[in-house]
Length: 142
Image (cartoon, rainbow, N blue to C red; front, side, top):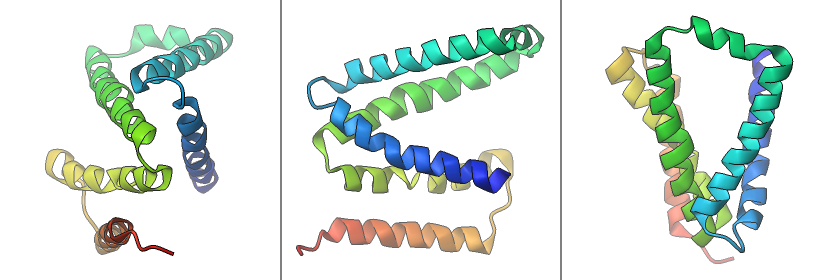
């Protein structure tokens, strides 16, 4: 089940930039991000209302609110704004390739800050990511 959910997420994350690039053609990245975030909020509010997920908020420890606020600031606001800005002015394929290196940052930082173990196959994956970036940077003309 984890594998299927991860594949679904990968497909969605792979398809979404196409719509993002199209949606940025006549607006600036901040407006596009605000609109996308608004749509997300509407869907989540409806989903929470339908499933009564709001009741869980009352039982969360305060540190959870803090951690998720930082995650929202870094990923949803700063990260997505940088992504939308790059997507607006850059090549869709180059931007998404560069953005796909985020797991490399997570791997290194999780080791230093959370004590997560780094395995040889993960290091190999990082090396392949870097090799892919080098190939993207070469930009051969076909």
